[in-house]
Image 1: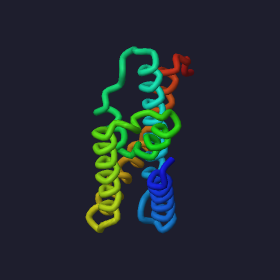
Image 2: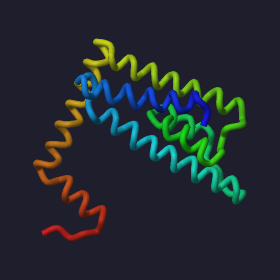
Image 3: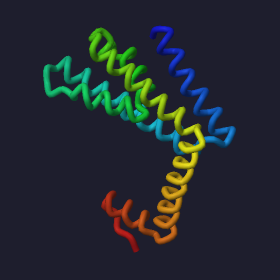
Length: 151
């Protein structure tokens, strides 16, 4: 990994942790980065595997969308681990633009307007989750998806 890769992953980890512990961002923001990064990592793995086998590839636009929406830490790790998408200059340029745009969005969430939006939005998500849990809908839905019988 290049030093820029190490620094960017360290910075996002440090900023998200500090922001959460200082009460600026809810835990769901960090969880989102982790989950989308994992999904992005797996998507790069699949694309690299498809490239080696000569089969259907994942669009570069899809890889960029995952990077834009919080998956860029996983993309950096996957690019280095699989040696995938590290040479194509046009891809790397757009990739780093997605990192900057995503980082700008995270910075915006720390402004008064962005913070208000974030806390209102996450509050609505928490209410939805709690109502699903209290009404037992989530349990029934989960069991239906897993093909279990509820009694």
